[in-house]
Image 1 (tube, one colour):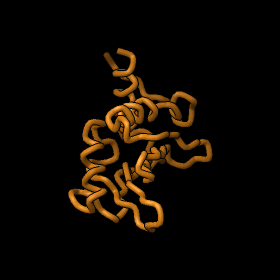
Image 2 (spheres, rainbow, N blue to C red):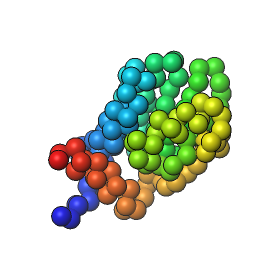
Image 3 (cartoon, rainbow, N blue to C red):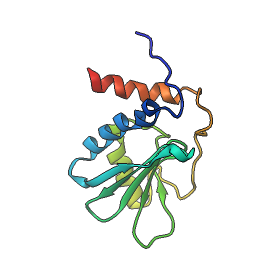
Image 4 (cartoon, one colour):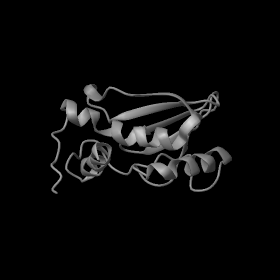
Length: 134
């Protein structure tokens, strides 16, 4: 079955990360208090924030992947695993970031630009939408 490319900045394109994000929320389970997606209509990257039950936040965007933020700390810890790590790997990467080690870093990685709409990223997101419909 061929996966079709979604046109950028359409409603379908804006909704695409939600399927992946829901899988991450499920993988984190009770650690997530609430979550929401940012509105990319201003032309910025698609992004989301997960408010965790311990008072910290886990944020994701389509350029840098996941980062962990603690209240009062000016530096986020970026999780290892690329811009779209498998959902079941995010809890372990979060544990590493909380401990200040593992593959986490304070340096912001830039895996891709949200301006490059035909780089295969949307096809990877489409896989999560397909899994949702099975």
